[in-house]
Picture (tube, helix red, strand yellow):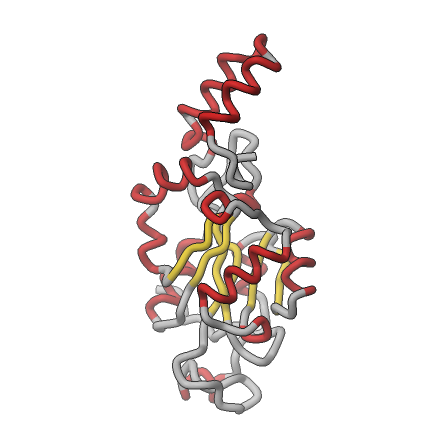
Length: 212
């Protein structure tokens, strides 16, 4: 409910009245939410930093309660690297509703066919594809690393060149994928954060710089 924009001040009393035997747990959910996301999924932050180092624009689209996001965002400095973050609780609509993908398109200023999106929820991936986004089911950082890379020549030429040698619109090359901050405590990984990648090839991610 918080993901869809319902305020905690309305939701918590209602649930407490409905399930009084669980009042302490419900209150803990409100006050200790951050403990359900204890750490990053291995490899995801590294991918974000490597893409940012190449000046690839990054965006995020997340199902997240507005109040929780306001509390958590200052602690998660990885999102300083993102140009914009669409938060479902703030927009009062959540994935996989097509409306939030439309909001993201407007906010990110990219057409559906220019966006690559990765998410660990198949319903969200299907919704993105239905709107014309290129989408990948996230099953770990290794899966993103294994996606077809740009050819050596294209990579050397820079991010404005696609692997097929076609030049993309200047400054429009970006990466949109699902990079969750962490997991735990029953918090769905899909409730984490996402990236975005642009380009005409549905299987093309920018060639990532080698590991340091």
